[in-house]
Image (cartoon, rainbow, N blue to C red; front, side, top):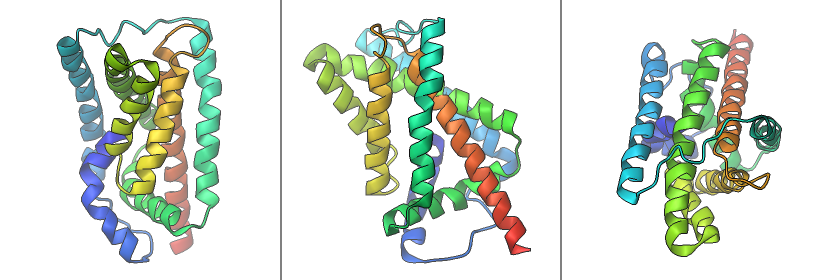
Length: 221
């Protein structure tokens, strides 16, 4: 989620250099985290509209509501969440650093909320980021250099904007390519599929991080 990345890039070196117990205080104040995150993610819709105006692209053109993309979106969330769960079990140093970073930055803030808040936040992030990257940037690049360049180029940008570590940037770019591919899954371009995948994945990841953090509090007692 870009709000987290935007506010926390300068702290990742702490987790790369030190092995510490889970922090009990987030980088974000829990009482304003939800509001600030929702505002930031919503502002990306305005960015998408503005860039779309410059490029002559309506970000909402490919957004169509029907049963098939909803089914594709729900099913398409599973591979990403399985990847997330798999990464939780891996012990490589780079993976552990990312895991500690996410838990220490998001855990205390997510702990203050219930699942409906996390579902709303994930939904807003999915809508705004997909409108920007898959609704504007990908077709903008495609219009000049073709579909493959649009898919790869838009997600290089996506990865770089999530670059808390080099590995995290690569993983984010790979996720973005998957989301960009899902845009055309089923034979017709529809933003609803990547929006649902992105939003549901963020929600499930938030819930998993919240539960892990709460479990850490119990073991620390």
